[in-house]
Length: 293
Image 1 (cartoon, rainbow, N blue to C red):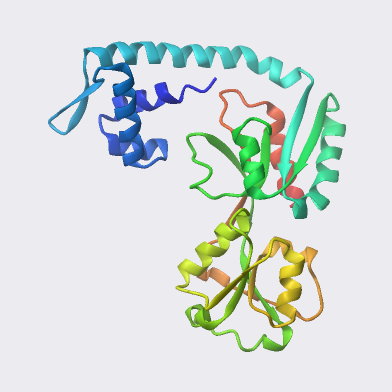
Image 2 (image 1 turned 90 degrees about the vertical axis):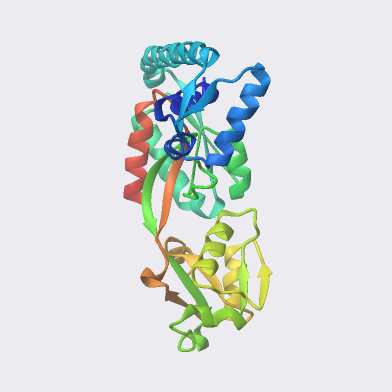
């Protein structure tokens, strides 16, 4: 059960302000305002009126808030009663992971469940970031691993378990290692080899370019990191790579240039849909994954 509508209205009532409610819900104020307007249109009656810069419930709003609060309490009761079953009942756990991570993480995660929760069958789906995110959204996946991108994982809907901090590196041909300028904005006349927009790496690459005021003269898109790095060794362009990936791609002819603190660290996480009573193996899996990352 996910009482999104009721949670939104109760938060507006609690904060007496759309802007404050939106902040607590981790969504934009216009989005919350549109949500309220559509709900009131569907109901055919106003739920709130503005009085002295405060949103005050109408008579209909008071009725709605009373019923919504009961629904939330019932939901909490449901999850409390469900929790013991979640912790003990055999189940299938469907995990989404990108292929590059899967090679090292999947065997260790399978071993973790075999030793601690043998009654749980674990299935993995390997694919692109957007495919996995779609699977989590449609409930075809129970959890996935990936970098935290707040715009795609709103805190009101997803629970994230922080696994590790990561950093970005520039990757250039070895014979260019001394030509990388200290001012990254001077790289605008370079060709950058980037991932397609369907992959999480592209979101991070775009943020890096924006943060450092880089407008590449040319962009080449390629979806395989190994191919991207080989292209960089051939002086076909500059690419970006997360530090945790470097161990998989130690190849001659490539130099990894640290971006240091000029770019914020990346947060690699485990994501699930928000739930009132999360099974205890999720916290244990997150702790285990932190040790193997």
